[in-house]
Image 1 (cartoon, rainbow, N blue to C red):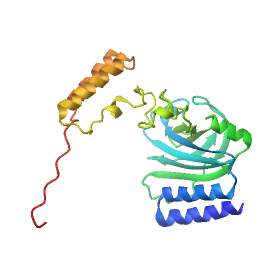
Image 2 (image 1 turned 60 degrees about the vertical axis):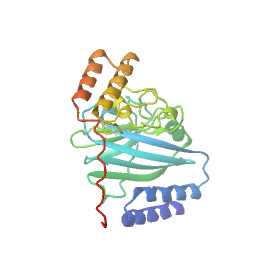
Image 3 (image 1 turned 135 degrees about the vertical axis):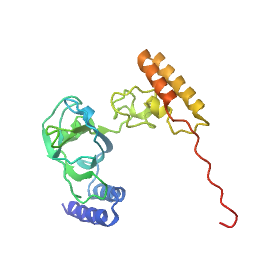
Image 4 (image 1 turned 90 degrees about the vertical axis):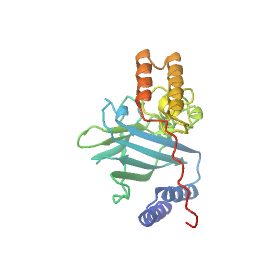
Length: 260
């Protein structure tokens, strides 16, 4: 366990001094991968949302996370944003929409997070071969509770980043879902996993408002023809685009006066 002790000390020191999760993650991954002989390595993503809870809730809070395996070791880094958690843990095996048994509590090694209204969880745990297989099948999930939702406010599956996986649950495999990998649950999407608002962004590179509205109308018609929107939904979205302030071109930079 010398490597685990070394990793703990180095990560804690870096996190306090540099206040950057990216460097802490890189060092941890290096330590884990050099302290053990990885049988296989795989990345996992995590999107935490009240929509994924069982039953669903209307919480506006959210969370994100990332995990990595090397051999039978799992390292995770998870953020719960805009909430005050009362409990946080990993559960499984269970698919989305079902509940599974408790596996382990999440560890908050950095209670003095520099990120506003954010709780950070990071740790590594050793898995059995059976647990690793469950994880790689997407059957582990994170559940975070609060005083308003004591049984769970945010939930998300630890999703393997495989080509044929679908980590945001939009029906589009990861290999095609590079541009919009974290679509909101239940949103209609196009063939590459993007919603109409991601395909036609309000602040995109439009020449003027007319160009934006035309592009949005074309996209809405296509979504409708593909059966992803009803007529009522299509018309409501087009009307919203027409009444919006979207599509104004970016202002040109103010030229500097000579000598400035």
